[in-house]
Length: 242
Image (cartoon, rainbow, N blue to C red; front, side):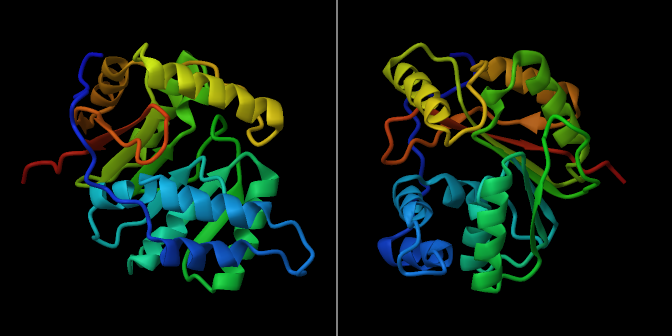
């Protein structure tokens, strides 16, 4: 796979059990007899996937606002607050159910400056200037829509700010095959509202981001304790000279 470093290991760690459980408690049902599936999902996700710590390691702690495209339950915002990050956070996602559960958890945890909104990321994006995250959603779009989203996301990256992208990539190996199967099962089960459509190549993503004025690093693996083919790609908008 062009541009990737297959032997590189991610230094990002998953959350420990205590921190993962503390965040997950905000997703408990109001009634003791209510459905706890989201609670268990959040606890397992944070304890096995280094995604959010990996993203925060890539983002400068400079106070710039963060736009999270395809935010799901808004877990990046929770982990950011856990680490003392106080910048404004806006997460958008097409899934109204996840946004509703995420917003209730934000209120229960009393997290400041953390906003979740329902929005299809293929529609015009909110006005924003700062950092941007696009995590585990790109492959649910076709190739043309992927390029359009990345261009729109890049427009919202301020000078000196960062775009962080995680996506499965088209690598053709065992992780690739496992990921494709799991993504399809996620769609068939109803957890994801759309089916996977296109697994991008790393060099194509770098070319799109470069044409949009960002400087993209080589992708690095961010699998954690999962069997999935997850890669982190970080891109920066240079500060204009003078």
